[in-house]
Length: 418
Length: 160
Picture 1: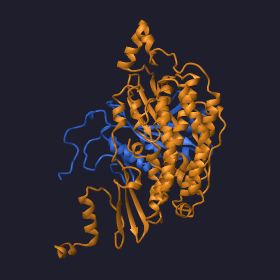
Picture 2: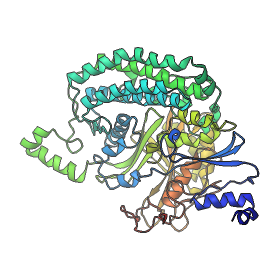
Picture 3: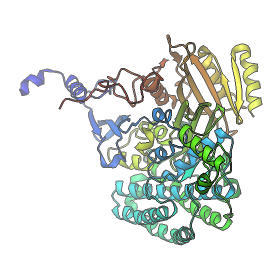
């Protein structure tokens, strides 16, 4: 048995083994003494079902081929048979670490298509939940990169903060995880005084609590040595690869859609865009840390400036009418019936609207032919594009750096695979 | 900014631009498929426009007898913070478009996705294989004639 397999050249055997596992990866160079390591899709450090085929020379990475698609659910196909309202719960399942930001991004795109705008209070609330989602997502990244390089306590402490955020979401939205908080032209319901008090309490304590976690890793020699100068990507490469969000800002590019193409009420708020030089894992961590602090400031301003008033736009045929009016008024009953059964009434046209989500530019494109459901919807997911830059970051890295680099890239496969 | 971009494109390509429209302040320009690389390179390298980031690239199925498939290029300028969409349409009988991976490396995966979902072939692409669906899969899921519930038996499952 042993001798029989020995007659076949080693390269053929390795390729055969890969073929047998239903892989579709081919390397152009002869394999010689290199080793191919298959990481994932079930690997704890890949943050989901990301599969990497890493070609190694000793412990150095020579080449890497990311394979995605293990979480592909065909949301773009599904959207074509959903009305615009029906798709909102699906957006929770894209970037499941910050579902509120996806909800906001989606309805902003639909509202752009419909040509309507939510009332000021809804706009402020949406900005606030987007920032809370950013904090929640970045806390996750901070904890997981700490865990990836061996600092387990950070994970526990950042998750303590995330738990408080989930309690807030539960009170504010009604759900902890799959929020579906936004509606076309407004929100599901207003913020209760209790939720407001919870947010105030959390946000006042947050800098202090963040500093606690920060202290654990910011001056930790092991953490810095594992991330400093690791996974470097240059400014030009990052732009060429279409990298967005914290990963791009870690390369010294001052690009944040909240500043450059303001949406919601970001142009009325005072915050700085976190930009760091270096393009390595440490810089990507620092950008996110800084962003959490900026988000904290933003939420405080939003709570102080929050106007009173309606949270639903009054646009018949486009925005769902209030429930009590549906039961008592004929017009509203008709509109409710039409919107629920046949969808909102969009014009013919195409729009693209993007927001700065926690991972980068999250955009929705709609091609409408006037029907209640989109003819084509495209999700521009930041993780999909960022993962593509992974082979560049992994050049000449050590095998142990791979997890630190993935951790600093912070991909979410739910979003990358759509 | 939209007007300036369109003016520049018209000046450079003259009759090459098929049509353009503006909806909700977004400019979309339709160009013939054989000109696509040229137009993209011009938009990226023009010192005034500088569309140096390809935000997105995806397919469209119009389900029409002529010019059934479209490819949409969503460009972003870091200099002007401006967006523009370039579109090109191809026939169902010959769904081939030149690749733009030479202009933006990020087009690689986007084009693979478009190929996977619509079966649009990008000529000159370095690694054109399916990205989401398994390699054995024979259909193109985002085409309008692919049923929402899928085709029974079309997905290969391991016997073990």
